[in-house]
Length: 342
Ligand SMILES: Cc1ncc(COP(=O)(O)O)c(C=O)c1O
Image 1: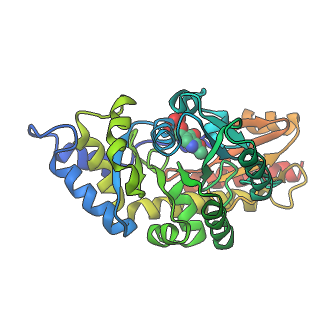
Image 2: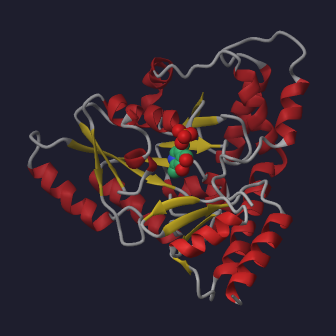
Image 3: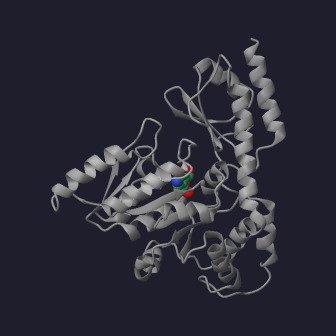
């Protein structure tokens, strides 16, 4: 029972076969290969928009390249307190912003707080040029707490950015999980939110270090590839990354894998809801479940080989992935049932 992270899952076999299939000959490098050309077309089909894309090896790199593109050194990126870029990226975003700041605004359900952000934007605008310029909003979809923005919330975010002339970035490390949970297609999501850039993560979805930045706002097209190169992310054997992404996107495998992961999390949720030893503390709409439990219960689970991460205080995180099996869910069910009757 491994619920530590969707990063602990293996690489999906279809991606390995696709890589093996092209591992037979020399090929053009740095994105001029056939797989990368196919990927460009596939992405345009998927998002239905004029776009540029750049492959990167980590989600942190994706966020850094995107934010460097959208925010000047005298600017501010507005995000939630809980955002990965605020807490888990070792100040790489701040390094890439070269003086630009992150400012955080969170609602009680750990999403981006438009009201608090508006308050600060008004103040900073009055203080111009003494306060750093409000430049860009970055939201995470699905959120770090496994939650979603509803259609109305996405529309409100769009209006907020339009009203304040801010660019909009989405950290989509778990983009597929968010889309399938909200039953949006990628096209619909983009049509509603109109983001300027998306960090499109596929590693947690079943790939091997395959992430990308998608740039929708063509006003930045002249700088984008310089920023990507300067971030040391222009990979030479691009074809192997493109091949993996194509294997995921073709026939919607990426969505099927996300549906599987989300379903497994909802099965975990079923085992824990109404259980006296556990309290589910998030909406658990995607593939992450946050659970409050005492030390004793935690030790009982761990002793039986159940792996999960401590999050904060007495809250623990359980993450499911494309690889989570029925056997793992069955074992979890039996373990928690035994606890209920003990
Ligand atoms: C919300 C979010 N963004 C980005 C990332 C990317 O992280 P990494 O740089 O480790 O690939 C993660 C990974 O945990 C994440 O959860």
